[in-house]
Length: 170
Image (tube, rainbow, N blue to C red; front, side):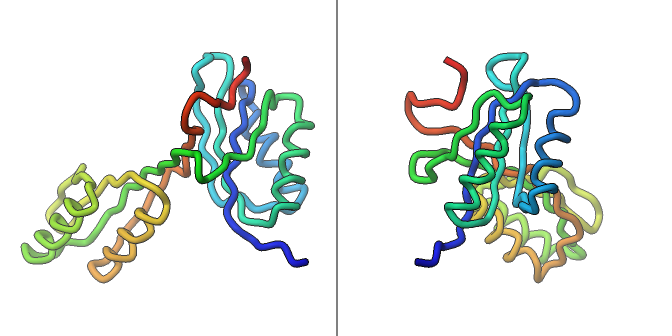
């Protein structure tokens, strides 16, 4: 039976100290796993950080990744997030060409429809901040391409399980 590839979200609680991101990303490199996105920041405990890593693969691949992560000394806890019970968001900054008033007006209107924010205005460009799930951000970027996307910066996915269950040290 062939296993189907899909996107998996992994939440890891790690020690909040220098070199941890390097050791995690180096493990992925050594094992030949590709990271689709990674975000890391301080957690509810100041000595721990939360990493949200998204990878594309089958069930066997994600299980292997989790096993390898658990072997790292600086990794405290690892969980595969169930996409049905997870709130996941990403932030993107998108610089779009706006050479004239008509284009600028169209871009502003689309930004409002997508509940984005204009965060910088220049003579011939706008920078838009948009948050949401990956599909929403990808759809907005596709919509902006005909106008001329000059630059994109994306944060990667941040995710938490819904309800009282959590990925943290009890």
